[in-house]
Amino acid sequence: MTVSNDIIADKKHRQDNVPLIEARSIDYIPESERHGTLSSQFTLWFGANLQITAIVTGALAVVLGGDVFWSLIGLFIGQLLGGAVMALHAVQGPKLGLPQMISSRVQFGVYGAVIPILLVCMMYVGFSASGTVLAGQAVGQLLNVSDWVGILIFGAVIIAITICGYRIIHMLGKAASVIGVVAFFYLFSACFI
Image (cartoon, one colour):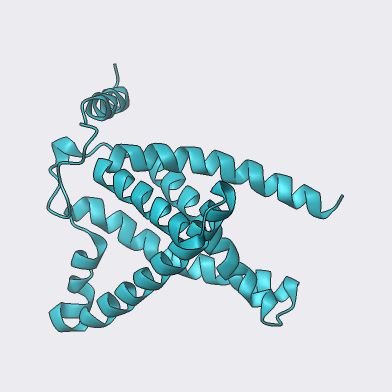
């Protein structure tokens, strides 16, 4: 076996021996317990961004009066710039074994890191709240229950997935990526029929 095959076999062995319920949180993850791959990161983030909040947020540019073509160009440029910054942090995180917000203290300093942390917290609260409301309304419509019951059902499912942690989240990311791409092409083709 070559060195690269040994690395792949080692990662596969680590993935098979990971418990279903998450044992760690935001603490340091030892090298021996790391088992993610580049493709698993891609499907995780791709699947996470192919959901109702991202679609509604992306459509706001046109809903608020923007031209479709220039709105798409602006969104594309914004994604490239934001993705470039996040890519730099994504490379840095595994090298340091730290979450991105903790490692960002190196660039911003202990007190300077407060500004991005506050912005990120506000962003996550808004993203979570809007996503929960939209998904809860969708669940309510699907199950023919009120919106608040749909929100509670959606919240309970998300809490269960979170408790299970890394493996389940990555499995769902893969499934969401496939379903999202199929749905996108279906909806895109439906626009022209």
